[in-house]
Length: 101
Length: 143
Image (cartoon, rainbow over all chains, first blue to last red; front, side):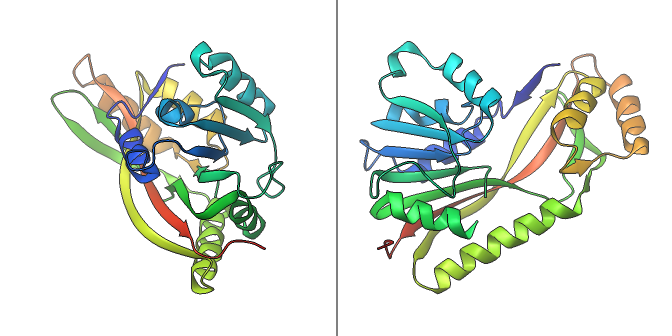
């Protein structure tokens, strides 16, 4: 079963514009509901640091397996609940709620 | 949802941004598409519970804006396409991944198979999802 998602690139283009990496490139990003990292790879190169969280371990395993070597230091994934974030206060410049509201 | 918003406020720096990207149920069109032409065959059916979740999320965010915690500075909707080579592949995906969100009735599957089978060989099937992206700016930090 093969699915192709957004070959037009609309979602990626809008996400990059809304995340405003152009005017503030060194962003620390929290992605809530990162799943298998499909959206993460759209912007990870533009961020200083990314923390992706999700409740589904199978999806997180895919995200970790797909993580490019050059991003290992900057992009991390963890199983966590959006209602109890395991992070200190004021540690991110941008939060992305990815299909998770 | 309310707790997730409060947590986002807590971990964001003052003036930090929140980007909310999500699908909006809207009886998404089911289409056949090739490079030469695209047309709608029918529309899927939205399930009730996710519609209620959408409404609850919108209400929670509206409350947060009303109370001065967040300001909304950008918002738009856009189409997001999922493509499959065949109707059967699409059906397998929908049954596995989206059975708690939408249903596609049997007559529509039948119509989709017919439309795809009689189209150009390169024709694929696709779902046109309605997406919404919104950017909020934190006004009041959690203390």
